[in-house]
Length: 122
Image (cartoon, rainbow, N blue to C red; front, side, top):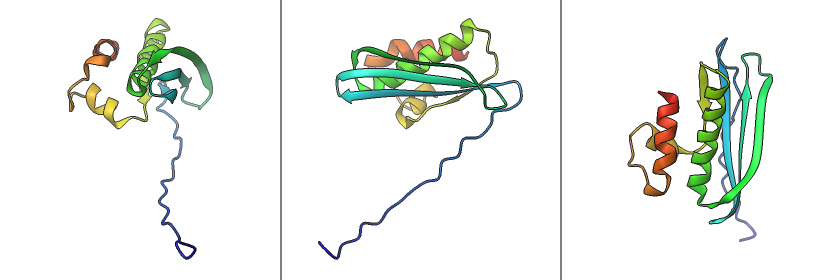
C-alpha cells in the first residue's frame, strides 16, 4: 500500500455569466445525515454577475433529494414573485434534472415539489 498512488480525476468548473437581461439561479440542498438536519440555499445573479438575492435557511428533516427539490422550488417561487422573467437555472443533481425534464419517473416523496417546479417554469 505504501507504493499505491490513487488516480485522481477532476473536472474544472467555471462560473459563466448569464445572457443579458436574464437572472442566473444556482441552488443547493445540504444535509447532515439522511434524514437529518437540512438547509436549502440559492443565489440569483444578474448578467454582470452581481448578486441580486441570496437565501439560506434550515428546513425540516427530509431526504437529500427532497432537500434539493425544495431549494429549486423556493428559488423559482422567489423569481416568479419578483418578476424575474428570463431565468437560467443551474442545479447539481442529475436525478432532479432528469425528473424535471420527464426523462425519469418522479419519486412520490417529491412529486408535489416537482409539479410546482414544472408549473413555475411553465
